[in-house]
Image: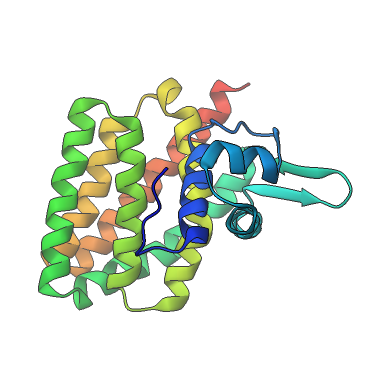
Length: 218
């Protein structure tokens, strides 16, 4: 794996391990170790250890003294609680981004919407996951509120992993991509009310998706 000189090794290690967890290559409940992750990702112990500490703060990894490290289980009730928070914070962030995004950022949101549409047409779930992660980072930057941005960074991996685990059973990639694209376009057009409404529509869909996943598992 080639290192990117513009990004710290810790950030690169975090990005790779987070991807392995979100796409279930490191399965929920499974044990992980620094040594195995170093071998799997090609990064040294220090960046891997620091990445794992960040993942633990995001509740993707449990670090248990004298017992080891484990990928956290996926919990539907946790997702429903998270959606209560996401509804309020993401509505605020979308509206602020629509008001405060620069012309360059608005162009990027337009492009992101087009990429979301393409991922839906191609049934590209992993491509959509990467676009979703980038989209949230874009909203976090454009809203000009570092506290909201930090909150989104905290919960986003949990939400993406939950979606990845259940989306094929519930079958909603085209709808998810379309709802994300609607938020992106409202921000691009500089319409705070439309951005807030599109954000609410996205969370409404995610709540229904989460409850459908719960019903399917019974």
